[in-house]
Image 1: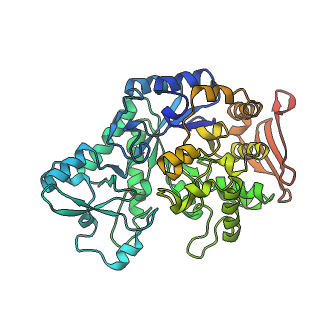
Image 2: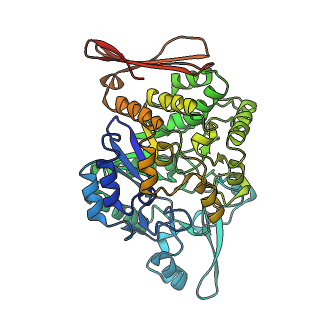
Image 3: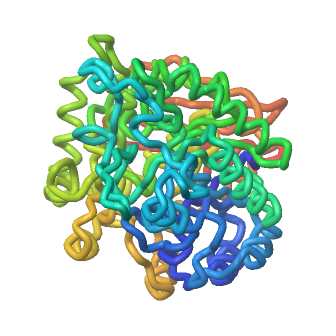
Length: 484
């Protein structure tokens, strides 16, 4: 993966009708801004119950977006990352429908994870209480077979997302087949979506257990043999994240978004500095994604302190809601159809009260901390909460999943703020020092001073958090230059 700014986007929400349109956008209006693009699910259908994360056919590109040849063309001009949804498939898939019709006589019976596969002798109360889940209740759904029999099926997320038995012969063949399609289309990196839930074992949390790491290792080897790197997506306690990072190619720095809010809200960088002393270096950094702003990644767990004091964290969450004019409350927790109750659904620009100075400072921090920065398409244009879309769908995360048209994009890229942001992205993509040594200069907590050095070249970020005065300086040949 190039050590350059990466874009994460849906194909059809960035002023493009299809993959070819996105290719043109990246070669024209957004030319030179991104070293790679993470395409959020483009499989059939893109408009299921979870915006493509519930594929009916994972090996078919939704024909409204194009086909595998179109993706191959895109991968010829920019690095492409795709999601491998390892934990589940749609209940509407032909495979699951065949299982409902024929039961154990179905050729796909072994593909799906039934309750009795994990608990052949039944489950105790403690077995059930031990299971970790991202939403209230238990990760099972009662399904009625064609013959009238009822079965209990694992559904970690929604009743339309049927969990796969990834170690069955059909499960392994299913995942291998997707990897082969990716390789043929030039995909050079995958994100393992929901991988932490893929392995279920009686008597455990069934989340990031030892066997999960083994599964991820095995899948990573298969991907690497096809020339594909692997990013693991896990929201978890920060110490767990550090351990995960030791065993995989890349992890997300999901702690960073709230730590940056803490830094800017409280004019104090100490918690951020503490994290940067120990944070994984093989990270993809984000401020916003297609999901909400994660809280669990910085919070305490089982009495052990997190990266931010829980009382301070509560204040940060309240500040986000207040800054958004309380629109984020309508999209968060039980207020809408949410899967992840530990996330705040809000655009990052709104979370900062639509303050352009604070938002630019946040992006500068993201680009200067260790890791490869990824920018979400809504964040690229300092997007505001889409209350119209939220009202239409009642899906909390849709507040941050706006559908841009090309006129909106053309207008945004002409704004003074975007021109300023563009300069920052181009500097992050081009300056050699970002491939060198990272240092935080010792200062009081109200000052953040980060410097990268490689041989005789350097680039530095200085922010006075009390006043939000910001300076970015760097070497250009024999000269010292200020970005803005």
